[in-house]
Image (tube, rainbow, N blue to C red):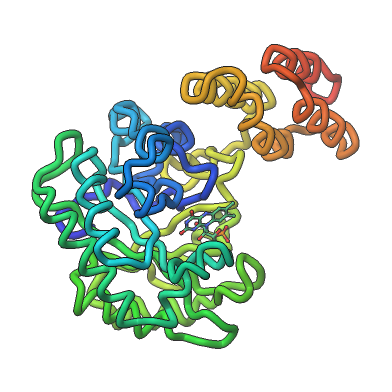
Length: 346
Ligand SMILES: Cc1cc2nc3c(=O)[nH]c(=O)nc-3n(C[C@H](O)[C@H](O)[C@H](O)COP(=O)(O)O)c2cc1C
């Protein structure tokens, strides 16, 4: 439970900037994700009605919440970032009215562009402001009242995603997590037990998560280092976390959700991988139109090709051809030719 919101299982899609739009979230849901979180969205851009932000980034598609099978139709959370409580209140109210089922606040982003504005992981160094930001977000979500498209009743829950600290060895995130829950009414904490200084490198500190789980009077969602099913099960065992968020482990691998949630045991066949890529291309065109989708999809190809039984030189060559294909028709031709490669014959 996140406040009064029921999440059908304990495996979620993590927020991924530049990636976590409606169709990437829909893909995770199709494979069993219980909840998905959007990429981070600027509270300032929402407050000032930036068109691309409000129409494209905040788009929630009804299919994201349609129950399967195997999709469970669970909630969609929108992640906001910002340092100004008034902006966060306004953005939270907007997002709640637009139909989000939950709101997550980003207090973990290590990127300089975000931190120098005082948002993301910078809030770990300014805990009083962090609590104010969280309180204002909860107020905004509550002011908006019942949501039109959402799941469940009552005001939508607000969660915070944060890191263990800013610099290596710091544990300021643990103290802040307690304050956010106890003083601001935050419904759950998504905890990334790495400092902002190491960005996404190094081993996550699962002991720290275990101690947070034992003491925090709210659910803890673990993120960090969850690269495959075995690691996810180990992390659940070691930390006692209430749920996990998959990030890099789910890139080009929605089957990881199925493995964890639905007990799927086999690797996807080459046909399944290529069919999934085809589905993704269709959705990208639906969202962005042909020309923008051609550019947008460039970063996706390598993730899927890594799941094909291709020799590394052949995979690199195919990725390069896909990334430089001037149109999606050309890209599909590359995939079609690739699918007839002897190593992919099944
Ligand atoms: C490309 C990329 C984009 C990310 N974007 C966001 C974001 O918008 N908001 C956020 O809170 N975390 C973001 N993260 C962090 C992930 O949600 C996750 O916490 C982190 O990658 C650790 O999990 P992992 O080690 O399993 O990948 C991003 C990570 C990556 C790799």
